[in-house]
Image 1: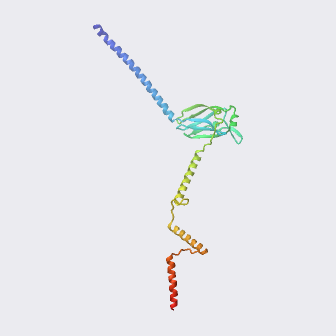
Image 2: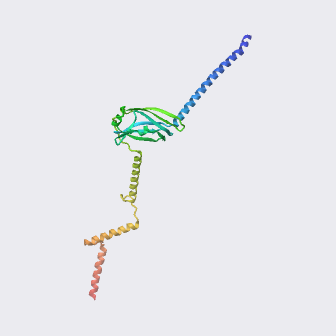
Image 3: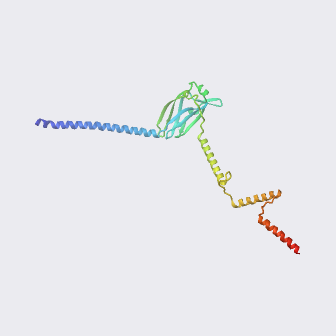
Length: 254
């Protein structure tokens, strides 16, 4: 018994050391987990506010356009594009380096895009690489963080696909405005009675003048045709006969 009591403090001290070691290890793992969570949250925040710039060659029927677009939530600065082979456009038969790849774009706002006409499919095939372009796009965000992103554009999978021209946003807005204008004009015509007799707003004096004019025209046309313009009721005809007989009787008396 005395021997057990002598070793009991040592056992308790050993258990305390073991518990401290386990606690320290668990605390360390918790700190590492929290750091990873913080890093993930920071990466998510950065990803949600950074710019995302894409470059692509888009077919428009027999023509092709270069499209540079920022789909991020902040502006992109100093956007430069390098392609292999060099991308060129043809305007009025003259081939020259494409503006989007030959010059840098100083500022590309979020949601904005830049479009450049390149040429036909035949022109693209003469650039030396068939229909495959590789390249790198470089740009930075508002804080100066640089982004370098490689890309590959394979137009072989897009050739021969059906195409229907899409109207631009300005044309769509114009069509909507014209449609609303026609609806408003039709509604005004409906209310004023110009094209429909459902609802008619007429000034009283103008209406009376119109009625008088139509009445005069009717009487004039009836007189020209030898027809009494105003129908005489029978009672007036009887009274006229009586008056004529009375006049004859009075003349005989005289």
